[in-house]
Each structure stands twice: as C-alpha cells, then as structure tokens.
Length: 345
Image 1 (cartoon, helix red, strand yellow):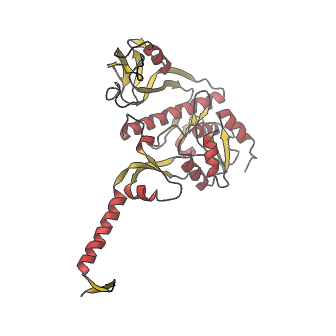
Image 2 (image 1 turned 90 degrees about the horizontal axis):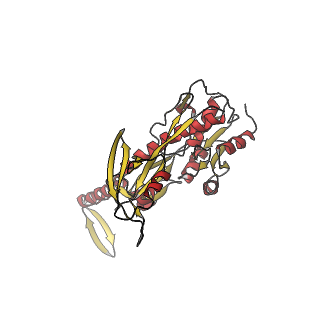
Image 3 (image 1 turned 60 degrees about the vertical axis):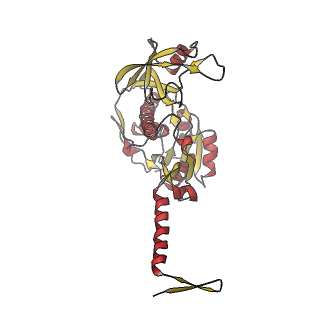
C-alpha cells in the first residue's frame, strides 16, 4: 500500500518504509539529545527538608510543637544536550557553564570530595556555635591550611590535590593559611619550596618550584587556594547524617536545630527554613543557588526563610512570592529574629 501526498501541484509518493525510518531517526535524535550530557550544569529546586531526622544530640530531644527547622539544597547535575537547547525542564532551573560550577584545577570527582568535606566542617562548626550559645565549653585548634582548589598550569597542578592539608612549609609548622602566606613571603620565582601535607591520614613532603605571580612580578607562587583546617572538640556528642549532601550552606539550619533539641524554643511552633554558611565566630556567610533554594522553601510551605543578608536576601525576595524572607548576618541575629515571632501551638 502506498501513501500519496500532494505538494506544490505535484504528486509525491512516500513509501511506508521510508516514513518509518524517518520517524525512528527523529526519535533516536530526541533520545540522544535527552541522554547525552552537555558541558553545562543544571541547577534544579528541591523541596526543603526537616533537619530533625538528620541530627542526634546526646541528652537532647526533638520537640513536637508543630513547627520545625528545614534545610534547603539544590539538585546539581550535568545538563543534557536537550536541556542545554531548551534551557531546562522546569521553572526555577538554571544552566551554568562548568567553569562556574567546578573550580579551576579540580575534577568533578574532586569537587564532590571537597563538597562533602565542607559539609562535615559545617556540621562541626554548627555544633560548636550552638553549644557555645548555651555556654558550653568548646575547644578548637587550628591544624593547617586546607587546599580548596588549584590553578591549572601552575606548579601545584597534578602535585597537590584538593583536600590536602598543608602542615609545614620548608620544615616550619603551619597552622593557618596566614602561616603559609608568611612562609612564602620573599620567595622569588624559581625558588624550590618543600610543602609537608597530610593526605589520607599520611604525611608526605612535596617540593614545588615557584613561578611569578604575574608579568614581571618578583613574588613566587605555586597556585593554590587555601582555607582553614581546624579540629573541634565538643563537650557532648552531636551526630549529623546529611545522606551524602555536600557543601557548607546547611550550617545555619544545623545550628538552629541543635539548639532546638537542647531545649531552646527556636522555631516557636513555626516551620522555619534556613540557609547560610556558618563560621566559628557565629557569622553567617553567603551561599549559591538562592533561586532554587527559595523555591524549595516555598514548596515546603514554611512560614519563614532565613537567608544571608546582602545579595542573597535581595535575590531571595525576587522568588519569594509571599514567603517571608528574613536576612541575617549572624547566628545571634537569627535567634533574635525568630524570638519576635508569635508562639504557635
């Protein structure tokens, strides 16, 4: 049987077999576009989650007052070619080039390792801040400079790795990034520098030859980005299981929940979402993915959303659609803001 089509006054005969091949080909192309990853990353909203099931505090309990502290995260994955063309499958999704998501000099696998390490640090810091708020004694000790990223093409590339901890430079003990900076001061380009690092629980020394910091610069560098590595000792046991979620942005939510479980009426019976990196001095730092996180908080029908003050708060208000946004600069400010809410239940 033949299918006859009319076109431009001419009769064109299309055989069923040819039509089938065309349909199958188009389907194969669509499947390929949907399945093949692009070089971009896509950020997608995820509904805010209660923090309480993740945290166990020795001697604490989770009050049943109808409220709760919620944390927000972002689903991040490689965008498919189809998503790259169409701009994402749903409202609230954003596309970013890999250079804006994965720091230079680090692979996707290394970035995941860094994210998980940052989550662990944020958990310990959150517990320390919460317990200090209650007057408990928390001891901290600076234990080195944490390698966060490495500049491609510089001496540290392929020699040092993200999550390495520098504990000495040319045999001189290092307790902080400032110590590394002091040890590198005066090192001219071409100087050999011995870095003692802690990697996977073992010490090793790696010698690197410095290069100029810039054109005609007389300052030698090796191309690393450093953060603080600290050991925190808590007076009571606090365990947090984030189920593989990485990054430091849940720190504020963790600290609030720990206080809640230790008897402080933090949420006052309200559902409170919170995001923000927390530091040992109680300061709350900015985070990424605020559009998706605001949507996730909104979809969880929380009563208010605590976000870092500044640009994060400005951006959150754009996507709030009626959700109350509370900007905070510190943990103490967050507690004061929540204390003004009328008690529920």
